[in-house]
Each structure stands twice: as C-alpha cells, then as structure tokens.
Image 1 (spheres, rainbow, N blue to C red):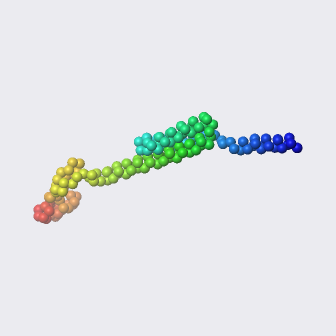
Image 2 (cartoon, rainbow, N blue to C red; image 1 turned 135 degrees about the vertical axis):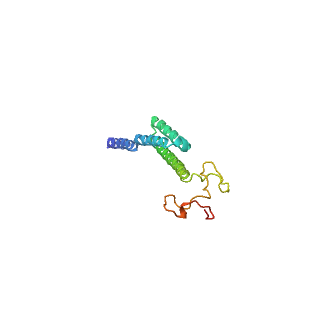
Length: 158
C-alpha cells in the first residue's frame, strides 16, 4: 500500500506543476507591438511622447521577462504596454482632430484672428476692402431704365 500512495503523490505533484505553468504570452506581445506601431503611425512621437515611450519601455521589459522565462511578469508588462500605446494613439488622434478643426474654423472665418481698427474703410492686411459708399443698391443683372440700375450714395441720391 505504501508504494501506491507514493505513486499517487508523485503523480499529483506532477499534474499540479503542469496545471500551474503559464503559457508564453506571445499573442499579447504581438498585440502590444502592433499597438505601438499604430501609435507611431498616429503621431504619438509628437502628440503623446510620454505614453509612447512608456509603452516601448514596457514592451522591452516584457521581452526581457520572456527571455528569463517569467511568463506572468511578461504578460502583465505586455498588457500595460498595449494600454499605454492605445492611450498614446487616442491622444494623438485627438490632437490631430483638434488641429483639423482649427484649420476648418480658420478657413470658414479667415478674418477671425485679425485686428479690427474700428475705422470704416480701414485696410487690414488679408482682408477685402470695405464696400464703397457709392455701391449699386440693385443687383447688376437687372435690366431696364429704372433708377435702381444707377449707383447711389448712402443717402439715396444719385
């Protein structure tokens, strides 16, 4: 009976060792590397350098942990690297969107940032000159001999 107990005990210890082993986190390392590449393409070097650098450092630490067969540590670091890279991507995309929105606002209202001198007819660089006081009051395409076709002053006399 003693030898049976020894066999069962050794088999139990062997199975416990197999069940407790952590598989290598190769898929997580690959996902982290892809997230870092995506962050770089999104402009993270310019818009989120701290998060981008943190992601790269954590991925390098995860690779080092894998070489030392510390799989749990490698998985944790790879997950953190992926999270940092995704944060860098989002911050970069947000900064790019804000720049685009600013450019659209500038195109929609090109005179918004120019100074206003407060003087009628004052010339401001980049701004069209003010309308003349003798501008026609009627559209130029109208025909006939009406007095509306002739230019008028602001007081309404020709």
